[in-house]
Each structure stands twice: as C-alpha cells, then as structure tokens.
Image (cartoon, rainbow, N blue to C red):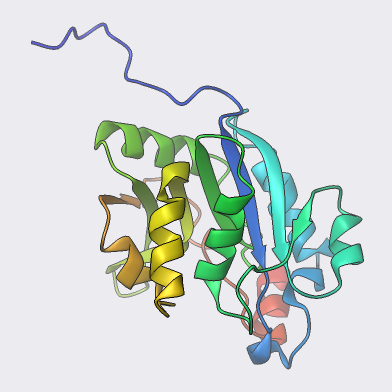
Length: 215
C-alpha cells in the first residue's frame, strides 16, 4: 500500500528545456513572421519566452526554433536554431530540432502564437507524465461546444524520444498525432475552475491577433 504521506515524484527545477516553435511560414497571416508580430507592445515570441520563464522554476534553458529573421529572435536573449529538416516541415521539425539541442531530460514545446498559455503548464504536464509513466504529456482544452480537444504543440517530451522522431521524420512522417500515437501519451485537461478559457487561443490571422489583444 502506498504511503499517503509520501510526496508524488517531481521533476527537479530546471530539468525541463523550453522550446518556442516559431519556424512556420505564417501563411495564414499573409506570410509574415508570426512570432515577431506585436501583442500588447511586444513580439509574440517574447510573450512565450517570458511565460516559460514563469513556470515555477521548472523550465531552465529556453530555445527558439525559427527559420527566418534569426537575428531578431536572438535579440530576445535565447539560443535560436533553424529546422534540421528542409522546406518548413512543420511542428515535428521543431520538436526534432529541440530534442537535438536539449541538454536536459525533458523538453517542453509551446507555439509562438499563443501568448496567454498557462503559467502552470510545465507543472501540470510534468505531474501527469510522471503519474502515468508516460513518454509524452499533451495539453487539452475545452472547445466552445464542450468537447475536449488536444493541443499537440503543447507537449512535454522525454529527451530519449529523439531517436524515434528521427526515424519517423526520415521516413517522411510529418503528422504530430501519427508520431505521438506510437508512444505512451497522456492528455492533460486544462479545464479546472479558474483556468483561462483563452489560454490556448492561437492567433492564426492578424485579425485574430488584434481581437485577442482587444479582449
């Protein structure tokens, strides 16, 4: 029988590397570099960076995955790494780049276009990962119709998944769901009372970005 006073396992402070995914084409924003668009007076990528820095000390080093305007991203104060795969291969290319340059046991990915993601994201994903002995913990949020929808670019990954992802992408795989389905993945709902309903709203167009800013 488990000791009721025993603390659940925890990931030590700083053992998670943060990864900001900013390597897309921004096609739905007219081809602009999405992470450099202003939100409340600062680039979207800056908001992602500062929110990763406020994850209760769990996130140590932070990396940025970008394929354009590298100097502008470097000015935010974090190492910047382009995709190791060619031709804007999507979020999995960012995962791969992050895992290749991750020096800690875990990697936490967030997109550059969701400036209000939870400040307890790392904590709740880490708790679920360890509790379920999973390889991947993925955030999920409630839609307007009440359905729980996964947020696959908000993932906590074990670093040892690098070899699996290399094999998958080298075989031409590009779909996040197809890769994560190969591994023990736990969905982590962010639908508690007090959770911000806009936390996972991603701005795909400039109009959506302006609407979120005004809200």
